[in-house]
Amino acid sequence: MSVRDVLIKSSELGYDEVAVISEMKGNPSRIEFLGAEGEINLSLEVTVGIPNSNANSKSRVRSENLKLSSEVPELDQIGNILDIPKLKEGSPLENVMVINRAEGKDKALIEFYGSNGMQTGPKIFVKDWRP
Image (tube, rainbow, N blue to C red; front, side, top):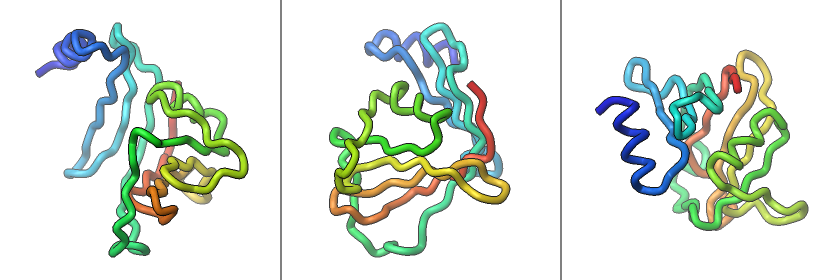
């Protein structure tokens, strides 16, 4: 199926945007958010890891309750694209996608906290992005 076919099908299902995940050597390497006309709204160069801590945790994110907490303003549009509201200040870290600045070769780190407040996977290491 081509990207054009995916865009047509998603439009038929009532979606305005599509996320395309590219892989390299079997692992995610890029996430591109495409608009209805196929334009790239946001492109992330990524690597993904599963955290070892809490590996035995039964923590699950309830996507219908997911909120966004971001300290990287350039990536706040992920919330707009995915229709995820911002976490209210002072709220517990439950069902939250957290975007923090990273050190070293990565520019940002995206982590998830489940409904019980425990960190869960995956961790998405953002090497770079472009609007």
